Image (tube, rainbow, N blue to C red):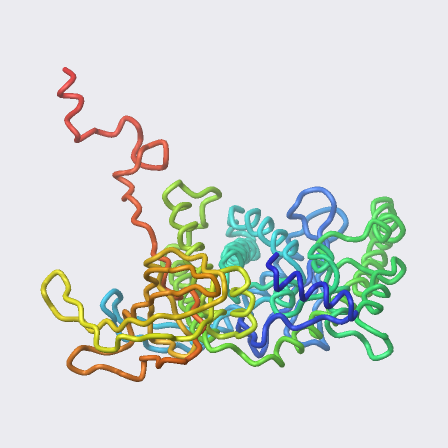
Length: 494
């Protein structure tokens, strides 16, 4: 927790109301997202109890699994709704021209977005996807293929949820916590009811703190899932399950109807809170870089559809070492880019980073606007250099690429850092955004007295070079250990 976050949390605790931690919304919100609430039964991690979902706040769909027996009919209905939402995003495409690294291709004009209450629901959907995508397809049962396809898409969506800045599957508590700071602990912020009470208390509440205390009342509080409350399990759910096990066929129909009514009443408050949170977030102005990240989301969705059409094999249960390393590196790069873009867009984020040394602001004291350097080939390059005086901590290494929200196309390379008694002098070289020597863009140049805030550049993190499979040891997913060795060591030892 940063110094700024700690300060805001203490102020919120003092005033009793949540405080804004971000001026802009940094994730895309669809006009018709698919809301999804899940409850799971005790026992196997992936066995569902109920799912409430839909795109209309006034007409949710409730799917309930029987207390015992097959869950396939319920999963088939869930597959129809989820895949229907996904297929509806595939109606229109756009043409992407060829680039230096990619050929011309088509991309869908939209992508699916599913909103869930909390990260625990994401983990439940991940376990459900792992279970469903490896199920055998029975041609005699048409629903088996749709259930397996549901597993494929749940795995894709939960994988996207691990990528910072992705908006395919979003836990609402994380989304709200990105933009508001409450006076309760981060652990308490994982409860949607209390978090929303702090942020948007009802009119009769004296403050967000009072509303949160009322929301914690055991007589009124209901978990947002996927686990249910112990009191609800013992007092209401367990008696119905026992009655179902002892009942005959006619009574079971009545019990299932009672179970539907009970679970609807249980999930309805969370359903309404989800749409309340959606309305709050939709009212925030969207950050500049959000559209670019949604473009990447549409590209990833288009690639996944292409994979499903031309290959269709389920993702492996466990990644090989190289694939896992690539995934980790890509996640790190995306996280760094997302953090840098948020800082470039949002003054609130920049203020927080200045307290941690990941950004600094200062006044330009000197500038060398005509500086020319010569590269290895002898070609002249225009590389202006200037000095900035700051009182912020500077915890960056020389050579780090930086950016400024005032000049988004410019890049600044951190040079020598000199610590003085009352300030820190930072030497910076402009490396991009200023045109060429024969046609320079002088608008990128600061002038003495300008105040600049510099953050890490979105493109500062580069993917590491990883070996091809044939050059990877068999212990890490490369060729088998009895693979022919071309190094000549065997011959040398004979």
